Image (tube, rainbow, N blue to C red; front, side):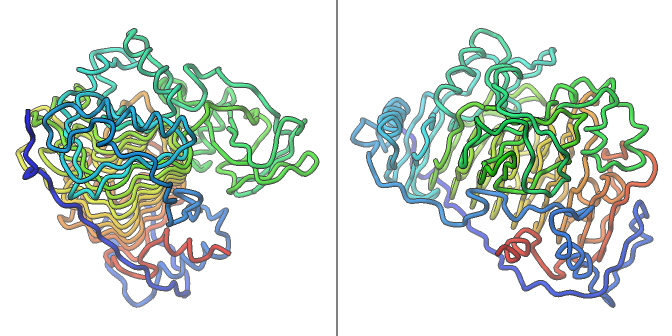
Amino acid sequence: MVVSRRRLLSGSVQVVSGAAATAATAAIGTPGAAAADQPADRSADRPAGLWAEFRASPYTHPQIPYVALAGYEGGNPCFPRHPVRANALHYGARPDGSADSAAAINRALREVGESGGGTVLLPPGTYRIDDVITLGWSNTTLRGAGSGATTLYATASLTDLIGPYGSRYGGDKSSWSWAGGLVWMCPADRYRTLTDAIRATAWPFEGWTGNSRDEFTELARITAETPQGGRSVTVDDPSRLRRGDRVLVQYADDPGHGLLAHMAGDVEGAAVYDWSDKTKLLSYVPYEWPARITAVRGRQVAFDRPLPLDTRARWRPRITTLVEPLVNSGVEGLTIRMTPTPQAPHLLDRGWNGLAAQCTWDCWVDDVHAADVDNGFLMVAAKATTFRRTRVSGRGSHHPYACREGSHDNLVEDFTVERRTVPAPAGTQLHGINAEGLSSYNVWSRGRMAMGTFDTHRGMPFACVRTDITVTNDGQHGGDASAGPLYGARFTHWNVTVTNGRAGCVRIDDVAPRSATVAISAVTPSGQTDVPDFTGTLDSRLESYGTPGVPPPNLYEAQRRLLP
């Protein structure tokens, strides 16, 4: 089958620069008040007051998380240019779509990766792929000529290529509804383990510690409490720890589920919440936080970023090994387009998925377009990975963007979700920019969403930021009831323009504990499904309601400007 190049769509780049932050008098909104009770107030620069509060205590602010280090190498905007080591054409790739090119591209990536890394070029053209493209080696880049010039045209779904991927929770749900990509960034050994288990109809653990939650080695126990925001911990024995090591900091829960209540901000409502029947949420614990060691001085171990939570003794905090991550690798300058198929009923996706980043750390995706996909861009146990200038378009998708359990400190910026080109089939669902499963400190910045919503998919993600985004808010959140609360503490929506006036999932002051909803459009409840999980005071903030565009326009960029 020859694929016409006329099917290519050019990429789009949107850049909005931030203004300098200013300081003014703080003003506290009324948590849980109705939209009509919060008129626009331009007489005081309220977010500048909240911003001034944050500047005074950036690592420990009760509502706003410190996310200045989200993304590749702590937010480094300059991705490396690995030397060109291979051209996929020399391995037999066909740029006219006349034959399968997956084997040739994968062979080039494997040879370059196994020889120490470099760049594999995909010159302009349309490359038919009859298999998954796997980038499984560190220091390796797959680089097209631009999303408007190089296309990977997928002819088979993940179900066709790997097999049915059942849910660990039973039923007929397909895990391809939230996992895997036809371009899959994942350490080669990890990818083989995952796909072998799927083919054997066994459920593989998708996170940071092997094929089950107990495949790790304890390196040290944390013996003293360091509060959230601290940079170092005290350990019992530092002999197995070295500067530069990439490790996991693991937190278990106590019988009274104090860890989960802490993730919810230790608010009054969390104290009486029934965690015991939230079986899916409980399966996400221990909480695993990947971190890089920057110093070992005696029994003091310092990390590359502030601690996400207190290290209280009853949560048995410890430092452990993890699977070898994919580091310093990227995918650039291409479109991933699917053979036209209708969108599947909800949770029955066959896996026409764009790009998945799994067990990636300090990696990047730049100028990549996913077209006619079930799911566009997926983060699964991803750490400090930047998605820049990405776009989802075509017949409509289930998750344009998904940030799943074990994913921390990732950055999605300059992103676009286009309006679907065909009506949504009956029985389908549209989410949007997703966060779930105790994922934390992730950022979505400078986005333009012609459809979808701010999907918080239960599993109590916490300390995430969505900022400088325009959205036609017509999607809905998902998540099974057994996955527990929609939100943990310190979720922040900052400068969001809602084009259709719908409140759901964007205005969160009456739903999310210790949250900040700042400078969003005036909105009205309509078809709301995001109802409060906690009773009592949430200690949330609603500031400059009805006035998007107030300074600083982009919370992430403003935090970046505070870096030394």
